[in-house]
Length: 374
Image (cartoon, rainbow, N blue to C red; front, side, top):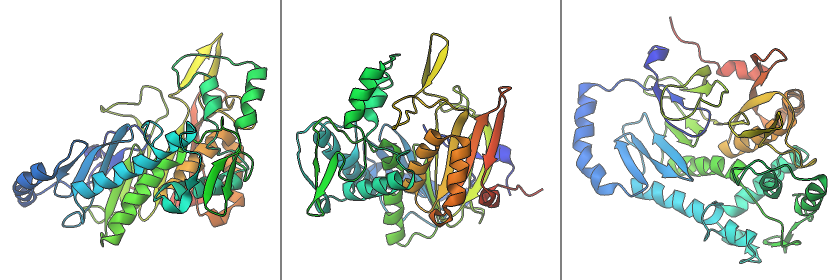
């Protein structure tokens, strides 16, 4: 077993970024060298072979890696690239030609859900988590986030009148602003309403890559896109995949050394972290978080810094992590306790009254803590 100092760090924009891999033998290095010519032939602009066990690249404004401990990855650069670009074509909020952007801009008035490959699943899962969390997860909240200046990189304190007017077109309850007619055709009741699936779509893209690998018979893999993770089987050491949770501080970003608060092991699960300690501004001595409570229209005002969720799917973990950042420590912990059928585990980092970082976690999370062999 390797020491923690030997853990290879993978750069990502998310908050969970550490893997445990075995060092390659000399024969493995020869295999990688022989693989180089093929890799150069197959790489694309955004996706490429790292070695014959790993594919990496750029997608959704962040980085990604697909890794196996099997003899080889049962896929290709082109297939992964095509999958991720197809996903973006429907759900990217940053590509003007994507389906969701055109729907938000009212260039498309009706979306036949059954004709989409990814949109329908994202919409239905979002509605499920919205219902379960009583609206703490709400993919229509983007206009409120914009009103507070977070998409415009400026501090802006909207008046209560402005917030009230925006909340007229914020809400994801069935039939409130979005109607599914004939069980399949999605339309708007108010043209000002918009959907933003950023808090679930990245996790869903991880799930889509996972399903692709599973369908191809991959037995062991690790997938990470922007910090959202899905695993199956074991790493090169025959152990569950090991990931690290960042210490919640604004400087803990980039590709260099990172301070890690804890290590956990996962296999056959999805994992996601949400935090509000990197995106905020201070005005007139008051801190304003980018996490907006959809019900009040105000930034959350509690001491929760980050929420890490383990669930069967990365998309569900992603959505719940966002919801828990809205709820705060006590409500989030209570939610998990009251909903055992959701099969989720939760790890929270928060700031106490003296300014020190403390942790709270569900009883089942202890089973995932990494215990290094002496």
